[in-house]
Image (cartoon, rainbow, N blue to C red; front, side, top):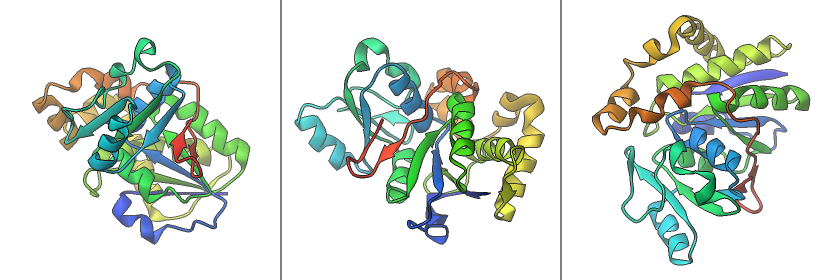
Length: 236
């Protein structure tokens, strides 16, 4: 089995092969995929990811609870923002939550025809790695990035996943894996310090939204693997 990494949704067409029986892991550490994992852990029945504000508003008019964020800020019409702390059991248990974000839901949209699409974060990294290893399928980590550009935090996660897979017999598919692994090795002694100089940390800080950073970087707080159902167009 091979593991590969796509650093941005803009690059995904170079990797796309919807007939391949591989696993695509979509990751948006700050904060969409971390938030989706938290919502499902706290009892949400499903997440309905949509790429546009217009789609989210249409669902809102139908009575669905909606989480919506653009440029790190919660949208005014939304019931929730893009923080894992917004989705408490009292608010989400048993509900189908519509969700749109600047980057994460765009990445899901890009890869929505994949054979198997799952949601990854540091919060469920062991569950994700175990899922892939048990399936014995090739793996592609799709980093959500920022507005189709490379970012550090998603690439670090990709390196962390790649290391776990390589330790279990996977092989490299491209130089992207070596780059992500090198970054992960450099960051491991002090992940938060490594992250502190990144663009997105500065973005969150400028909007007083750094409260979830430690949670987003903490491994294995969630023991589940969210899976995208391309027929129902939801994540469960």
